[in-house]
Image (cartoon, rainbow over all chains, first blue to last red):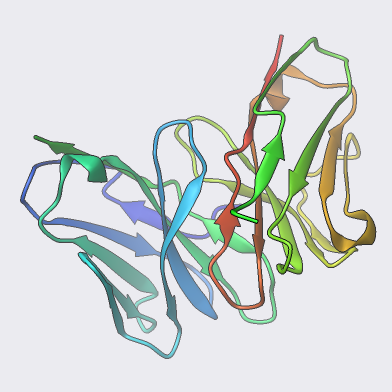
Length: 111
Length: 112
């Protein structure tokens, strides 16, 4: 079964704008990860945030985690057309070894 | 090793046939995962190996599905008596403990 739920399901923005995607989950987690997937390809790991962390940065990416609300957000700043892809959040629970994904947000960045 | 390799990239098979997919993980990763993804959905967990031991299986993994990881290296996923509902992308991933997962490019299965 899916664990995370992304919001919105689809997002369309202009190049240069910021894109924010949200993820909610249901159970206690060890860490939360964000992945990108270009159409028909495998997933690429973007960033991992642990349950005791609140914010992480990686280049143009900023991830926040609020364990009290069981939610996370991914911010992509100064978006580029090449950022067009589906973005998934995935959670790893304590004492559990599998990672569960949400249905993803489809991001389109128009040049 | 530059990444996780999956073979074949595409497989078209007739309903009722058996198919087998292979995954070669990153050599120093002891954990290997299989996921299934259908169009417009996120990957769904199928099964997980730590070294050669299969530690968890999803309820999605019916008795027609079997996975192995002999000697804790490459893994195979076999689907027996394929059905049209098995059509999907089958993704393999590997990781060390508590890290990000590295995914292969997947095997796209079409059952006709």
